[in-house]
Image 1 (cartoon, rainbow, N blue to C red):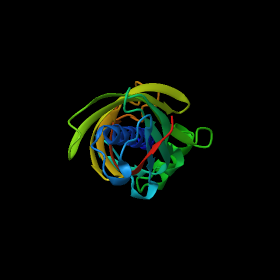
Image 2 (spheres, rainbow, N blue to C red; image 1 turned 180 degrees about the horizontal axis):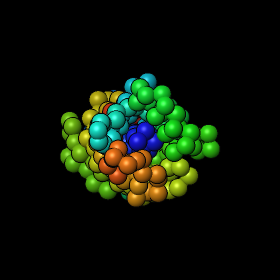
Image 3 (cartoon, rainbow, N blue to C red; image 1 turned 45 degrees about the vertical axis):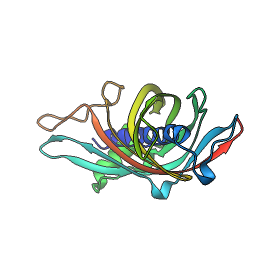
Amino acid sequence: MSFDRKSASRAIAAAALLIISCGLARAEPLAAGTPLAGKWAQLVFEPMSTTISYRVVGWPHITEGTFKLKSGKIRLDPASARMDGEIVVDAASGTSGHSIRDARMRNDILEAEKYPEIIFAPQQVVSHGPPQGDFPVAVRGVMTLHGAPHPLTIDGDVRRDGDTVVIHCAFAVPYVAWGLEDPSILFFTVRKEVEVVVSATARLTWVAP
């Protein structure tokens, strides 16, 4: 159960970050965030201002916890909506407040010592709403979890205020379908998806391709 949430949390963090960059590149220029011809929008995420939470519904209880963002820097070409960069989550940082469950997730399921990072690499902005105030975006990319890559498209909401971008997103990670262990045992059952919610803040600058 714990490991599922970790995966989901990381996926969320990555996806959310990507969403923000998309919105920034498409948004109206403001002060330091003014786009320049031939430049790419670059978003650098702030770990201390980013929250990654997960929730796994099961019986007889529901497990909730958090993960920590390790680093995040992504770029977006406003002309083609192409993206690159990575959003990295610390695989060993997952916590639900239950030491035994968290240790199993960290050591047996996620194998954090062998696979210390969960990475989301954005590739393309799929769609976005009118870049004014709060607007929706969708980003396609690849999530690497437990050493295996998985295509992932994330929907979210973006808000830009000058060179500060805030993104919120919520989605589900099908961890069993992705090849991870099903933590259900006898009468103790858990859903095969982890619910992830991410709230992240990033700084926007314009850089050479």
